[in-house]
Image 1 (tube, one colour):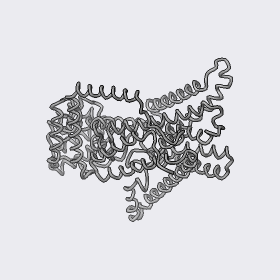
Image 2 (cartoon, rainbow, N blue to C red):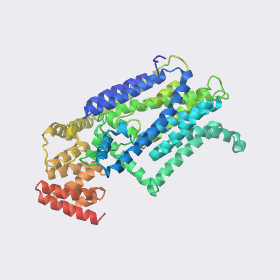
Image 3 (cartoon, one colour):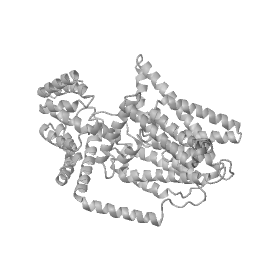
Image 4 (cartoon, rainbow, N blue to C red):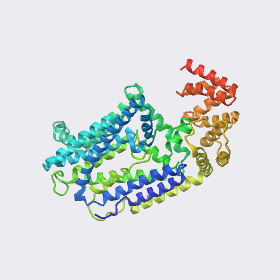
Length: 558
């Protein structure tokens, strides 16, 4: 086995450079470095898999079954372990100390959505190996694979991750609809109006997608079971999208999403463990260049699989053909795995969220492996036509930069200000306390950048929001209200802006303006009640009375 050139090498190199830049801009060097090494291991997994000769691709896929089953067993046992500790901790305090080890959850108790996402992307390969084992009458492999499938499915159900279930059903359906389309094309439905198998298959896939979108829409609008969770995920994605606008140049840095979302969207002083969908997480942390590289890797890998499947299907009886018999079902499994990743990435982030995972590039590696026809692979997308397209796009980009240079320069200073603000705020994050009355001298570099951004573009929402928050912490309520009003005018649905402006109105003594805003914030009544004692501790009885009045109003008008 030797390392090989692959069609995705150039894109992977660009992705690695984006990782390196993101490592440098992250506010937390040690967290970013941990994630950097894990994502670097994902590149290592990619090149190890692509180094395997194609005749051994089935054995690479065979490893997926035990890995998925191992993840399922590990998650279930870890969940039982920690639930048992939580129960025992009610009676014996030493168990609470063991329970505190959950702080290291990436190793001891991964998030159920992360486990579910990994199991779901590995299951199509296990199904393909089971099909090959049955075809070749390898009884031991059939039994082992079947056991792994059952354990994996039980573990997937135990995670209660609806998004992963939906993604797996979609991925396997894309595979299963092909033989179904063949039966329909040869059956009575095609007797009067003969249609090609591929047209029928395309129609079935379109119906599948339409039904899923309709089901999601009905669940949200009619508040069906699961609809509330979907609505929360959509709100989370909306918040993440707004954060990407604050860090539109080089990204926010690796492993930064939880703190940024808690501070600027939820406006909480403590840890808020959550993450958005795959695409927005990548865009936020790596910036546009990193996100484009990763999406290009996905698109290139998908193109390789589809092209390989087209090559297989152009031959008679491809699943019995000696040349394609060992990779035909693996190609379908790879396509299914890609569909799982693409669908699950819309609602969760099992591959890049948190500290990432070594399996980030496993499916692209399998795409390269099962689509290989020659020992030497040509780089993907490198052609004269692509060179001309790239040149035209660069020319258009240069025109945009020149035509909107003042506004673009303002976004650059806003980005610099946001980054400088993060470096100052998150050195001791989470602080678990509100920042009112704190020394803000460390925020001076950020303030200079943000002021410069407003000089160039007085409609910059990022600069107004950040300056408004700083003014609130300095107890300069009038200035805070001014900046937050400007930010609200630019984006009236920004949760962080709505919450900060509502609180600023309360402290300014304008409850009639505050209450319509705070009605959109579910935790406002509970936090206002805490603010009553908080302001008394800071010897601010006037603000404590305003917080008490707001608490009474919000509780009586839920």
